[in-house]
Image (cartoon, rainbow, N blue to C red):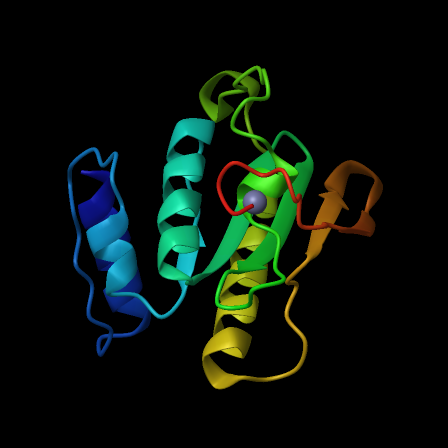
Length: 164
Ligand SMILES: [Zn+2]
């Protein structure tokens, strides 16, 4: 199973790491988010992303979000421990009509997932250690095909149904 493979891979890199692998579909992330210092979203669909975001907003937990599709990568931090922070839904509204683009049909340039994952790990360690300036309120966009990084501001939406 995917979760067992992930646990084995993590423990082969660091035998001291404690991994709790859950092999079930979750709609409510409240209990898991309550136990976390920082939440990383590495999922591949908007329904799950919004459910995780809602739990992070409710419990004021920092969310480190990453996405990769085709040659495009995105990384951002939504630090909900800070009142002025935008949430994921401020950027991608739950009401928006989005066409779900599945990795399974569109594919993803394999090294891109490594880059996005490493960026998420970096932002997470910075948040835990209180080092430097996080990506809170900014979205980093990687165009891997043209080797181009852009950073755009993400503002809190006063009319956001989740955090407004
Ligand atoms: Zn919001």
